[in-house]
Image (cartoon, rainbow, N blue to C red):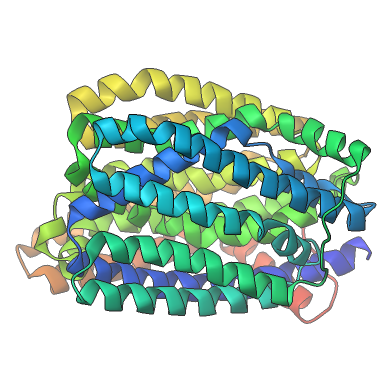
Length: 488
């Protein structure tokens, strides 16, 4: 497939994944609202700790063999079989580590944490068997099938969890939601997969997977530290109830990230891998992708900061109002994460995963030093601010280093969306402050409309010509015609 054809498929796949992802996010968000009104914060905290300890046990075997399979372009039949075998082996070894760690966890934490840990660990065996067929679908850009499977999965598991929660089972509903989702995904992915990988052993391929994946091991450990160590600090130093509020704030803050990152990661990574030897084409695709990520993520994050009190009160209820300051403190992290995730995809796709790993190791070390004092003195809000500062540092470092692989003028990508978002946020606060106390619904609606109007006017003023050109290019690609994208 030539670069023009690949670009057209990239845009179409992005549109498809975006539609499926947004529908999936809407369904999950509605289910979370229902579950948060039925289940007390403590159970969400126990579930978060269970997932933390499972991830900690997995870190010993956290080789990046999934990224290796996406990167590989030859001898795929045997590579699929070796990949499946390695994942199953990792699942079994992880279960053994969970068995060894369980007495230590049980001695310090509530019984619910142990129950969640074992349920998630056993489900992990099934999860290990889903990676190979799912990645085969992604390598062929078969996102229509994947999106259909994901949406049906979301509908089923959330419906079951809500019914169980209505019956009075809180932690059980959350655990069942996770486990049933893994099992359903296993069945559907194997049915839809374009290949049927068979277990095989190839010493050369095993060494290749391990060698490629080993470069990502420290990065995986660092990623775990960056994205989950705060759960442990909050749950241990502040308590399971506080972690329940924090974990829900964290997930809510990631709405802008999940609306962008999941789309970009699914589609961009395979495309970057195919263009890894064409610097000009890779630069053009990466620049356009980064501009799109910034244009979506930054205003969504600013808007979430603005409407946080109304959002929490109206959707989740007064019980969850302690989320508001935590949610606002996490906005810096959620705004930076999709920009950082995009760089990791590019580093791995061009065969330089060690670069991303080194940046993440630096972030992890910084966070490990910051989290204890931040959480001890600032409680959950301090932890939220610490992860945001560290993520911002990682974004700056990654984009500076990326100049070795792509030719992109970052100032032109970020200045417009950032300026428009911050100015619209400040002006919206100023306008709403003059209204007195119109009520939660009226205040939320006023903030939303005010910010949307101001941001659209500002971004049109700052980048109107470029946005019109980008929109024309996307329409042309969707219609199967060549684009006229200007290099950035």
